[in-house]
Image (cartoon, rainbow, N blue to C red; front, side, top):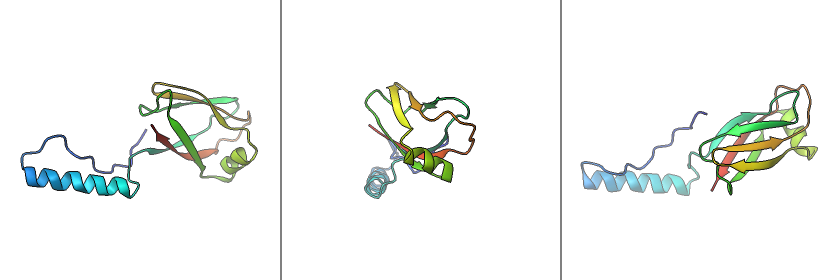
Length: 111
């Protein structure tokens, strides 16, 4: 898993004025949607489910997918892909069993 790398607000900082500025920058970035909650994921070929491992996933997380290839869009369009289980740090994605190796998505984890 690679993170986009938006700056996080430091918990402590040596200069209180600079600390407040860094927190404000982070809050403004959050308002603009820069929440470090997206990654890339490719469905496993020739099986009917894939495991998505991400420390941010919990039992109640929302996981949304945006297709990045034509085959990924077809998977969504066919209605054959869904999140069938979620746990701490993992989710099972059930999907069509075929040999396509390019069903790649950008996904978001919220909650």
